[in-house]
Each structure stands twice: as structure tokens, then as C-alpha cells.
Image 1 (spheres, helix red, strand yellow):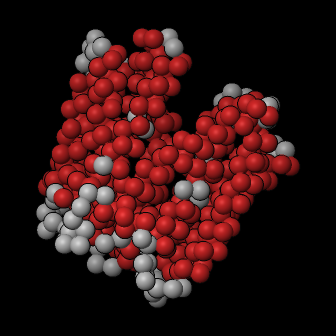
Image 2 (tube, rainbow, N blue to C red; image 1 turned 90 degrees about the vertical axis):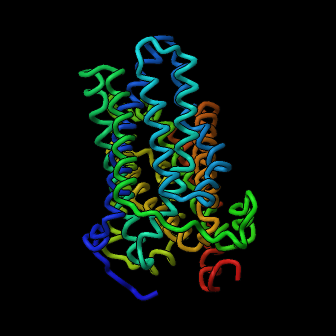
Length: 402
């Protein structure tokens, strides 16, 4: 692949992508409101931090099951239809959750429904976005735009969500979130054209995406590199005890949480602006190793400013994840693209959950969040180096599976 410098303006010239991009951004902004609103509703009704954590976990668990199963709907039905139906279902579930006096148990069931509806819709969006562009260069840049936008919206959304929820109330915040799903559905329905169903002549059975990954060495290595995020995310789960150990004020917890996504946005911009697609792919192993190796530097007992800088660097190098997803999507055959994406996303979620839980357990056992982060970096290097070596060898061998 020749080195290219396709500009973001060229990507945004595609009307279908603009619709998909805006629909995603609007939905993510609404979701930040919903996260804060649900946390306040649950805690106000139960007074229990445990139940607050349980409800937060419910927003992840359905995505795991849906990613392995329902994501395959994106390979069976028209992808635009899957996205529209998923958004409409999410709008309905969130709207019902906002009704006054909604029983707590019913809210939990509806939250599970939101996650289940989201899984095939995300798989369809990922697969459909590749179909919009005539070549990989434009597609890679589109993923850069998505990465920058989603992380920026999440940062700004979480920063302002608390103030907005306090101003309008939790019920209204949930209704706003419901409206964002309606807007997303309308954008996709009227701005994205229907495409023929994927060719499934060679991938007709349920679970074909998982089998494709199993039989494709380079794709497996790609996911190995991607799932290292399970260790890179450990500092996020330890933000509160790390702030205390650093002697920082309580407000520093938010700064520590924001440092990684802030670095991710900067890293994505740099990679997109200065590195060709081919070079980014070749350096995936290097960036993946760097994203966890930087955690080992916590061994020098950095100050709060130093910790923020290290986490920002980890986020910047972690922007390689966008190249992983773009490469994965381009390589996987269209007929199994949805289900394969579901497997990849499910593995990513599991890695993040296990990583945060293990990091917390280690920090509790050794009595130091900082040292637990150092250990996460050491383990990460041990896993990243062989994956990087394998990637360097496999990338030069040709198409996956050959």
C-alpha cells in the first residue's frame, strides 16, 4: 500500500459517512447524560453503592452476550435496517425507563434491553462504514475521525452531564437520551442507502465469524494486540486510590480518568496526520507494547503531574486501537464481518473487565495502587512482545489465512 495523506475533508465529503458519524456522536452524547442520570436515580432509590455498581455492570453484560450472538444479525439482514431497528428499540427502552415511578427491577430489565439492542447495531455500523468507502485509505481516515469524535464527546459529555442532569432532572436527561436514539435512527434511515445482503455462500452457519478468526493467524494476532487494553486500562479502575496515594485532591480523580482519553485524541490526530496506513500497520506491535510499557514508569513514584503525563502518553500510544479495528474490518470477508466484529468487541469488553478487576484485587493485596499499575505494565510487556514479534513476521506474509 502506498503512503497516502488523505485529508479528513475528503472523508467528510461522503454524505453517508457524515450521517453515520453524526448519528454516533449524538447517541454517545446522550449516553453520557444517561450514565449520570441512572447513577443518581439508583443511588437515590437504594442508597447503596453496591446497587449503583450492579446497574453500571448491567450496561456491559448484555453487550457481551449480544456481541457473540446477536452481532451476526448484521450479516443476515440489511445493515441499515439493523442499525435503524436497534436505535428505535434503544429509544423505546430508555423512554420507558424515564417514566415517573418506574420500578427498580423494571429499569434493570430495560437497561439490559438497551445493551442487547446495541450489539447488532454496532456490528452493522462497523461493517456498513467500510462499504461506504471505495478504498482502505479513506476508510482508515474515517475511523480516525470516529475515534477523535467519540472520545472528545465522551470527555465533554461527562464534564457537562452532571451539571445538565442537576438542572433538568434525571427523568428529563433520560428522555433526552431517548431522543438522541431517534435522531440517530432518522439520520441513518434517510441518509444511508440500502445495500445488498452480504455474500454468505461460504459462511452460512451461525458462528462463522468466530471460525474465521480461529483459522486466520494474522487476525488472531491483531486481536491479541487489541485485547492488551485489558492491562492498559488498569489505572482507570485505580484512579481513586491512586489519587489518594499521590496525595492529590479529590478532584484529581476526574483528571486521572480524563488523561487517557485526552491522550487518545491527540495520538489519533498525530497518527492520522503524519503516518501512512502502511506504516501504522507495520508499527502496531511497537505502539501496543509502548501503551503498556509506559505504566512501568510509575515505579519512579511520579507526582500528580507526572502521573497525568504518563497516562496521557499511554492514551496516545493506545490510539493504535483504531488502526487495529480498521485493519480487522478491511481484512474480514463481508459475509462474516458483523459476527467477527461481535467477537472482537466481546473480547475487548472481557479484557477490560478482567483487567480492572484483577488490578483492583492486586492493589488491595499489596496495598499500593501505584505498584499494581507497575505490575500491570510488566505483565503487559510480557504479553505484548511476543505478539509484536508475531505481528512483524505475519504482516510480511500476505493476506490472513494464506
